Length: 282
Image (tube, rainbow, N blue to C red; front, top):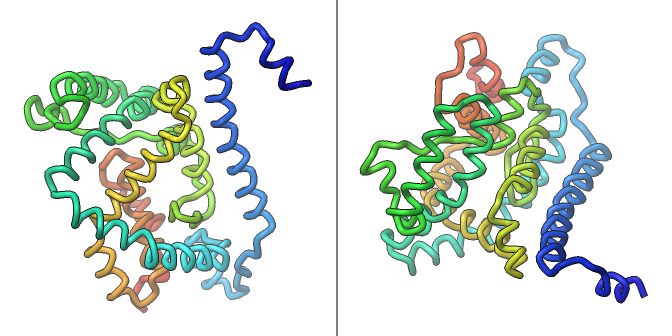
């Protein structure tokens, strides 16, 4: 009876599709809440009693290390049996020219979210550059297949996500996290990913046209393309790392620190925040 009453309502087809789009996004909130509950119930690393060791423990900011290592093992297993073989096949079948067109197209789809976040951070010059890139590449770059904004008019690609916005607003990052499939993160960035999903206009456009899984396919394409571009470099890291977990944690924090500052170098007094104590020479 409830279903029949809903169908007999005065909602237009457009309104119904918009409702479905919003409902789909609330699924991400449920997933986020579930992850938060799992983290709260997870066993944490026991802080050492030795003062020097405790200082290193606090500086590393990884109280969930036992759980994180298990998730990393799962991610590496999934990468070995599925993700890496698919990425190798993708790189083998699709020539570099085609892969570059796909990467440019996917990057162009991300420009609206980058624009919004740069504006929220008060980075209006960067937001203006992003808007110019989007309109130029969409118009003259055939929907973004060619990044002519960079090569022809010098509008460089900007960075911007809601985790970065929260950083600009002074929100702390919280402990280090390793998320299933997604990989290294922290509570601030994980929350930011959910908000970015709500910001993304293409999800609403796709849902309003009956394509509810377009966002998933886009995320999948981005992941495969990204993995295909880092096959050799990640193999090298795995080969040379004494402790792969600590190495990845350090590398990700350094990379993320640069992203948070839009590529600018970290202040000298902040450098230890992104230097993993586990990788320091004794």
